[in-house]
Length: 321
Ligand code: 13P
Ligand code: SF4
Image (cartoon, rainbow, N blue to C red; front, top):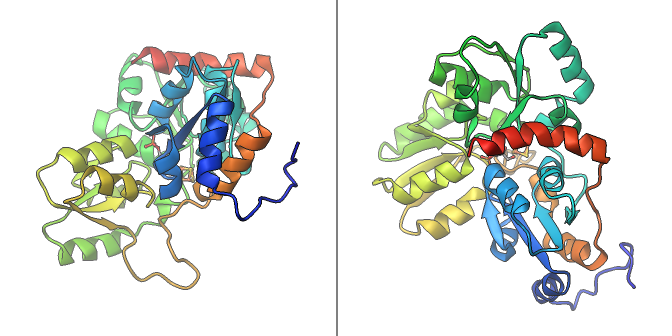
């Protein structure tokens, strides 16, 4: 039996091996839109964080869920479907948002605001979810906030940009945790405005993890799956895409006749060859997927007590549809 330290034979056709192993292991491969094109193409299901959480929950026939995304996503799969072996190609694939709101700090914040409802963006650890009342994603955040009685004050975290966007859209005040996504935070409103001026026929579409001054320039704001749907169905022909670059691959496939321009579009320096690329998401590789299926490692594990506490706010979210 090879171990994780066993080198991969360079003559192996990794894609054929992954196909063989996924059948042998009864594995379902889930991938987020921010994964490399090769990974998106080999996945059984692609999706945004909400769609993938539902896919993981509904993976009844599989014995193994291989989650090509970041750690909080694979952890969510384990929380909602604990009887499966849940694998992640690179266990160090984290998320700047999740790192910025550890459970003990959220607990201290809650203690200062005992009458508040705690709404946490799904980009947080299981331990942080366990301290929350309800989880949301960028797809369903409006619905989740609307489900909370208007007279109830809300603590929202860890993404202050998504929180601020929701406050504006829903006309509701919330206390915001000061977290942000390291990728979406690097988008420059000035460069986007210049790009729009050069492409007056292009629509600027953006993920709500972008800062307010960037979202102010947007013709449409939505989660990854909503941005994809917009490009597919909108009557326009050209789009400046304000989110992580991986999604352009599926957008191109879904709407081959449309022109897609990533941000930042130019002025890349030697130090930053692609500031719209998430370094955490990109830790997963085809080779690591092969190794994960071969060795059934690295696995996501947590105590049952933690899982049950984290499941509650996720179930509240999923019950909203
Ligand atoms: P969605 O896929 O839910 O739009 O979220 C994007 C994200 O933050 C992934 O890290
Ligand atoms: Fe986290 Fe941002 Fe990467 Fe998404 S793109 S995984 S929010 S760091």
